[in-house]
Length: 569
Ligand SMILES: *Cc1c(COP(=O)(O)O)cnc(C)c1O
Image (cartoon, rainbow, N blue to C red; front, side, top):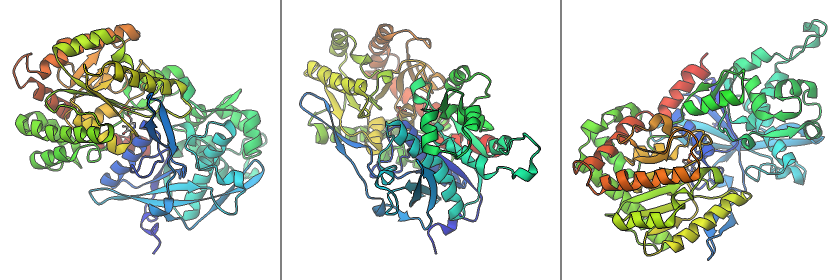
């Protein structure tokens, strides 16, 4: 029996994403978007919601990160071998790119949930003998920067993906575009469902936009203008030729350039942003479109460290399938048991830090954790704005810092930030114990969100669409200290689930830094050392993070909403 067979009997939702984080050993992701895609499929597996994910095989992987003596990022290639993790698909399809036939095959990765559910993931691959050498590399590199390469990647994902699903015998009830990268899938559907000339009245278009809109939904992920792909029509003409008339693309994707977000907006009946604040910002960016809000969530089992899993299994059995049960954490989980489980997670992080960096951290001093893609708007340097003030705070109440995160190889600003963080680490040596863990991936992320005591997030509003690592921290009873942007606008209950930094409006770097120092010095660190209120004050906030936030900001709630609002309409 073909390994695909079990998945062909029920109509499925096709979930398209340029990147997907399946496991640490499969480097087909660059950051939060891919992790969200992985959590989406993991939640669908637990909920037995029939899905099929479509992504690119990205054989070249992302990259392995290390640092030189100056603290500069060093990038090593991280290719992976699909054969070791997936089985080859039996079908191949062709599309025409740059007037050449390009064959698209792929791999089946079966995602097995810990509750027994399984979901198919198709990883598209053009590295086939029958292809021209230039075309074999289309699916090598994650997010090619060159416009032509990128457009060909997106054509393989969108057009190749739809054709391959059909060739393999899938019945698709709904197409979900995770970001605009896959918007050409909707154009392929326009073509597939076009009316024959004899069915048309003179002058009537053969393309049935309402029919395609009914089949599609779209999730937009970034308020950063540059995050929305645009291609000039000269390039589109050269790569896609007469795939559909350019005039049709102009109508749907913009007169001047082909804007993939606009294309997806015009061809989807259901559109959403990934947090309430982000949906508001998106409505302003794209006036005239109805943009819903489905706030992101993280996969409960994946993002809960083993000692915390054991704790929840004992006190709130069933929490994995029904994370709403965690709402009882503040009453039903004894604080001593929670503190013990956290101490164990913290020991695991401290051990990893020692092993990877040689830095020794103290189990009884608080650890501030900060890890995410290193890029300017995330402002990883905010904490280090005034080193003298930071030293004074640490002199009164010592704390430690653990950092991690990769910068995109072509993000020069992000790479400078990594270098700067290493410089601060040297400047603070002997005063604030600090470590930078290399090679941030799923495993490192779990160690950090569970082993830190405070999860720090300091983006520049309104540029964080959602952010998810703070939700992961909540699953481990780790409160966030964060700027009010993205999900934290909804998740922050001051002093109950964590703490805010600054006002919800754009306050500027120095004001935000001052607000961060004040909150650390006057609220967070005193509470940790038991000097504000009762000695159980800290554990109370840990319980609050679990009860109020893990119970809500999880992938199961998110998928139930997509199922009832986006997929069934
Ligand atoms: C969760 C996660 C992210 C996203 O974190 P944000 O807080 O949304 O920036 C990025 N990379 C990895 C490896 C993750 O696990």
